[in-house]
Length: 146
Image (tube, rainbow, N blue to C red; front, top):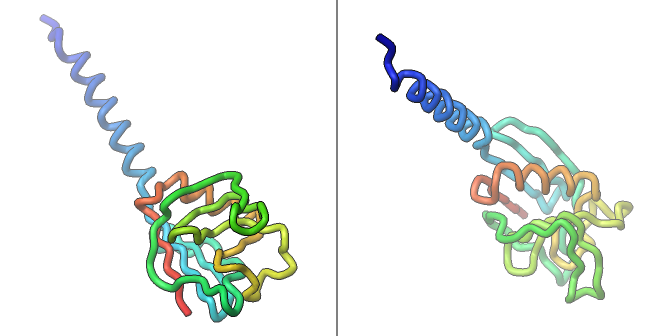
């Protein structure tokens, strides 16, 4: 005699296992560390270093805040209302109007020249944006040190 519940239960067990596996494999912690003194950003995923890029943080009079933050908003294409519609591609806002974003002024990377945001090469900003979107803002920590 065949069990009428065996097949549906087995299928349900497989589906639950697949969903759980997808959920746990997609879960990762991203740590973005920005060192204002060296003007560098390092990105680690689950404690494994992945990227190290030059950045530009706030120049004199326009400091980039120090501390630990989490992404508050993400905008693939954004233009600053405060600074003459300046493009801010792949913006990750982390503290009020401060964001990590791409810049067209790549010659200035490595020195403090921004109005307080953290500027990245546009290709690197796209990589970071995609990574944070994939793992989620809750699983992303941004640490900015002097």
